[in-house]
Amino acid sequence: MNLTASAGSVRVGLAALAANPLRTFLSTLGIIVGTAALVAVLALGDGVERYVRRQIERTTDLQTVVATPRTFRIVDRVPIPRTDYPVFTRADAESARVAVGGIGAVALTVTGPALVERRGAAPRAAIVTATLPSIVEFQRIALAAGRFFTATESRVAVVSASLGLTVGDSLTLNGRTWTVVGVIAAGDEPASASLVFVPIMFADSAIISVGGRSAPVLLIKAARVEDVDSVQARVGSWLGRRYGSEWREKVRVGTRAERLAQVQQGLLVFKILMGAITGISLLVGGIGIMNVLLASVAERTREIGVRKAAGARRRDILWQFLAESLAITGTGSVVGAVLGLTGAFGITAIMRARTEAIVYAAFTWSTLLVAAAAAVAIGVAFGMYPALRAARLSPIDAIRHET
Image (cartoon, rainbow, N blue to C red; front, side):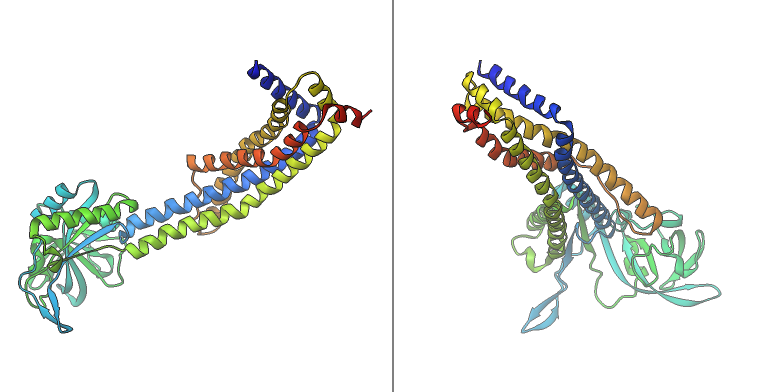
């Protein structure tokens, strides 16, 4: 019985909206504009976040956990070389990959200077990185020609285009000959100096030694930015099992935690700030709904009195006007969400076509959920006062009001 009465009140409210289409449309327009602005800004924020994440994956700084052997120890503020530091191998990299789990990639790197020589040309200085093929998962360097070397190849190299070499050419590093199998695309080199990548097992023969053994650095890439802290903790546990409780004296495990926090905080602040600014449009729309409903209460005071005298309860009158408010906000939010997404994708497409700006929009369910929740909140908040005012009217006073 209660459900039937409430349903009847809702039908009365919706019929009242249909009886005044122009006023209903104008009040809905405010919600449409507010929701469209909110959805468009959130979609742009989602697009920026996705773009930043892609850039993070490309540069790898923020998703990479770095395990670096401590080749020195500080005594009385003087660095003293160590002799007992660990030298990571390919077996260690595989062990870390299995033990840590849930990661994107593992690589080893040894970096140092070298002179690149080839017949008929003056020697060129370059930064040589001896590494595993999995380094491409970290730096994602585009190749203009050729390919990256495999784990079983030897005496092969991938070089910068700035060295003027092509696939199949030979070069000399430290008196040893290497064959070029890949050339990095011009403008895609991750450093200003010329680069040469060679297999990790030939680090000692490719890089000019500055004394002592090579100390490969172990790189572990988290699958997501949010996983960096947990991956760092698991790497520490693996090192503890491998080198004992004093592993921190032998290996330094680091991340770009501060930069990571800055990126995450910056994205969140951007979305909250822009969402708050565009949320003002929704508040304006809510005020419009309140004005419309207050006018409706004033115009329909006699009708309310008659309904209450006929047995309608306060909750029935309350539901009647809340139904009107929620119908306006619900319709406005749906139309506004469609317009907001369309506008966000359309504007960013035009910006990319007319300029070189890398601006994208993105669709996420969280954006629609926020917009829907905001619209419902506005409908309830701004529709409650007129609904309560109507529900509290005395039947006798309401009937007399327009007699």
